[in-house]
Length: 374
Ligand code: MG
Image (tube, rainbow, N blue to C red; front, side, top):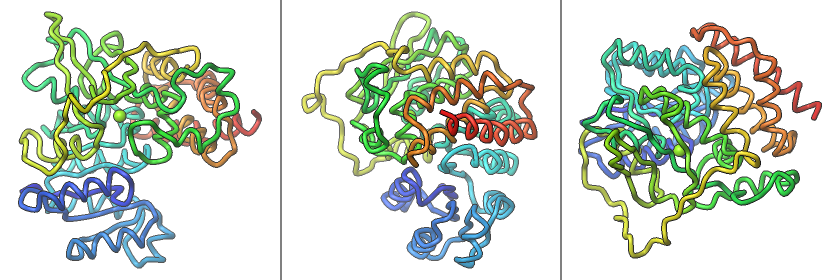
């Protein structure tokens, strides 16, 4: 029996994680829940699980709903001895401190919040290694690579290829993209996800963040991680080994599969998901990324190359600009322009918990200044 705590339980990945746990009651027991500020849904989830402990990240919401609140309470929940594994499925870099706390306390981590690795991948992976804990990816592409790599180390890999659906604006040119709206951006062709990540999919920044996430998770060099557009979202990613053999992971786009694999790794357990049927699938196609129309992927690669706190600045600027776009305060093209301008201003230093937190806060202020002017 795996005893799990779910951070971000009211979000898209969180609710699907509880769904997976509900389907496998003899394998997975939920022993704690945390959400940002949606106390009503959180308390309902807890009641459905026999009253497991709950925490809200947001202090104000916590006092309103009479639950413990704030980062200290989240860390307390994560470190409670009952849990074997902590699912980090919060939106954004707010998941960093709980991730480090979980590893520090000797818990395994299943990570959906890629921003945590983008901002502080070295800190997180070093700590996991030092504590001998497993960091399993929930991100579907990384779950695919992780599954393909079972039994093989980084020295056997020539490259990995992360697939991208291409998002709702695939095939559009810069001029077509000047006036696109949040409603259009949120209309994702194959995956149903939260708002911020859907905007990241529309700009392809999601693939930039995923490139950095993969570099940390799989200990690869930048020229070993490629991205290809694959509009059907059936091949979730693939690994090309030194001998040119290619191993891919395929299936319907359904996050419950990577979630289950991350929770029960290395076991594969029967479930009620619909098996993939190649005869019911549109022909599988692949295209190169159009970097002129979608500059965000290259921005992310260059931030990783710069190193230190640069990816953290990229991530924070992107989070601010993407959320501003959703509120109608920044144009679609303004998102990448804001990220680029923040990176130009940023003076990267070596990444530590302190420098990452400082950079995160600085880059958010800088991003707001920039998109407000645009
Ligand atoms: Mg993904």
